[in-house]
Image 1 (cartoon, rainbow, N blue to C red):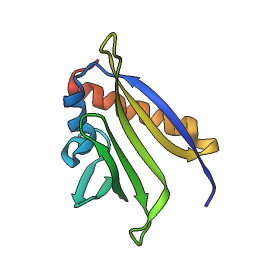
Image 2 (cartoon, rainbow, N blue to C red; image 1 turned 120 degrees about the vertical axis):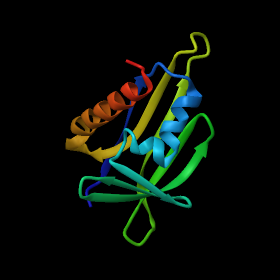
Image 3 (spheres, rainbow, N blue to C red; image 1 turned 90 degrees about the vertical axis):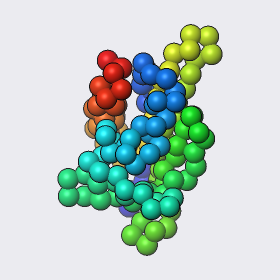
Amino acid sequence: MDQKVRYEIEFPINSSPQLLYQYISTPSGLSEWFADNVNSRGEFFTFIWNDSEEKARLASKKTGEKVKFKWVDDNGKDTEYFFELHILVDELTKDVSLMVVDFAEEDEVDEATLLWENQISDLKHLIGSV
């Protein structure tokens, strides 16, 4: 498997951190903008897009702040790759943004960034943050 590179993107979002957290941490919230369907069984989440399915383990979460999903292989073992959604709140302005940390093949980072931009756009429409 080719080595993937880590990248981060920050998206300003007009929302309360509490509302945003519901959309990034629950199967029902994630299935409204991130994937076609999301199922969870314990700490394992299954993300379904069209005909493909990926499994991840909820590696960590901090209520109201962030979630980190580690991708797992076919045997349910953690891979070295993950994605993290982190809610940032500016102390002075109280502006809210969502930091996305993800991995992609080096020549696919632009494409992966575009995909995130589209998904976050869907999320913003969903919560009325446009």
